[in-house]
Image (cartoon, rainbow, N blue to C red; front, side):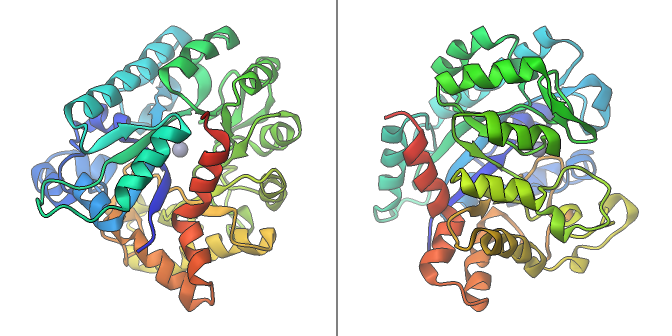
Length: 366
Ligand SMILES: [Zn+2]
């Protein structure tokens, strides 16, 4: 079974907003949350450490995320109306991850260097211990989703020191760039932030950026560029959102040797699918997701630029993903679906984790 590297999960946000304990299995969390408001608001949980073990999920890009107060519908716990608050909320999530790692060093490790990455990957090549409680550590790579937590470019040194390696400028629009539902280009602050980010070789995440800002960033940013959780606009014709990646942005990412993490979220796979409108999971089979993976590979002309960015538990859950998937562990099914389409085993393994591994080895500091 190939290792999975998942390029987007809102771990700290869920811990703080819903009190989720990701050392527990998905099924324990679902049982504990049954009858509470959480499954209605965030869907049934999809992620837990035992499922990481079962699905061989070795590394997760774990977000620092808070939402602007004007987008209150997302959940009320982590909202900011000013940049000081944004900074505090983002910073507090570093503390959440540190506490998680300190209390469970056998289960989770922060990954901010190639050495730390390779040590996690090496652990996964060892035989599974007999003790059911033991297993392999999951590496967490910090990813800041929406850069309003960065008060000024001068603060990047501090964030880098904390271990942050990946920054997306937008979620909704930020003062740095146009974003989801709030289109617009890079701002002058955004251009300055990019110039400063390049000094540290921060990895730039284009997901959530409006097309104008993303396209300019491809041209302008001198460091590595990726999209951690986005699908293909070409397969979502008729959709009104600017959340999906146009082909020219995908091609630009490929030219820059970036990787794109695709999301198995039904509303990002079928135009008009909405849990809140009573849409059913069965309407969006897993092959609809595979089509997005294949689209990136067709544009690239190889299987070296597609990955999985599940975004699991990020505002949705079991009710909103293809019916073949019950937990994060089932992402291994993606490999067999790709094989059925004629993908070589090595290509499928690259899409599950190998492409992100290669990318991280190239761009994390030694
Ligand atoms: Zn997101």
